[in-house]
Figure 1 (tube, rainbow, N blue to C red):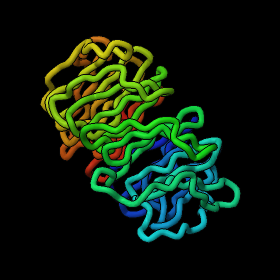
Figure 2 (tube, rainbow, N blue to C red):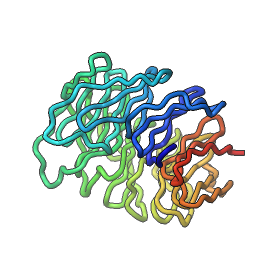
Figure 3 (cartoon, one colour):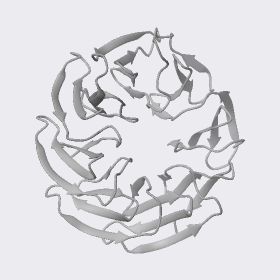
Figure 4 (cartoon, helix red, strand yellow):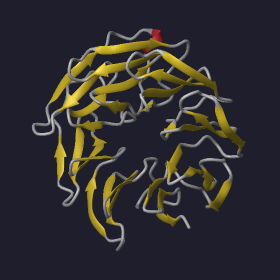
Amino acid sequence: MGGGSSYPVVVVDNYLYATSRNGVVLAFDRESEELLWEEDGHGPLMAHDGTIYGPRASHSVYGYDMESGARWESTEVELDRSLNLNNEPIPTNNGVFVISDDHVWNVDFDSGEYTSTHEYSQYSRDLIGNTDIPAYNNGILYHARGVELYALNVETGEHEWIVKGENVMHSGNPAVANGKVYITSADEQLYAYDAESGDEIWTVETTTQVETSPAVTDKKVYFGDNQRVAAVNAESGEIEWDIDIAIPESEVVIADGVVYLANSLGLTALDSNTGGLQWELELDGGFTSPPTVSDGVVYLPALNNSLYAIEDT
């Protein structure tokens, strides 16, 4: 890849898109492994309506035509400081949303122009830091800032609700599913809130602070901390299984009944119903991003600057 990557690859149909630390976005044919195009850019990737969004300059967001790689660039927003390069732009039918220190911005697909969906007040000590990857569902953008979690209506620019926690909530990323918003907090808890009202439904203690996104199916919520991986009943909050596993905290990815954990040791596959070990793959230096799974193949950038396709047999 010409450089490692901390961002997962994106798979759309028969094509795979990746970004590397040496500042390029790469498009591959999955079957032939042919490099289709290569363009300048670096950052997390997200696909929407024939375009790959994510990489950006300090004040602009880039998009790439999936087939040709032709680069689209938004206009530059006037900021005292740059856009946070850790905050992932979220493309939706209502535009591309990206968060800076004090605004949620909406980038128009056609003109590339920014408008402010919501402006936040000046910093207080409790409101420093933003969610890296917001969650979006049915016109509502869920994201955390300091100790507060927001449900922002992107059409009205108003909050449907605000939850104020006891500790920092932006350290983890929210996930929305099953009518609930799931998020971890610095107080070593996994919370489930009602997506419409913001009412707390249940909470589960994590053994350490979790800074990744919960992985959600229609029945379970999965998380990994520094000491274990756990599956929680999505409705009741009861822990259905947890296993001690000697790996650093890892982003949990669920696909086809398998829990995948990638880290500096390699790749681990667990049964999603029981937590039983299915297989392990060791790699010197390990992998540098969460896995992407498609058609029984796991795609992963590695520390050795290579991109791996691993068949789950």
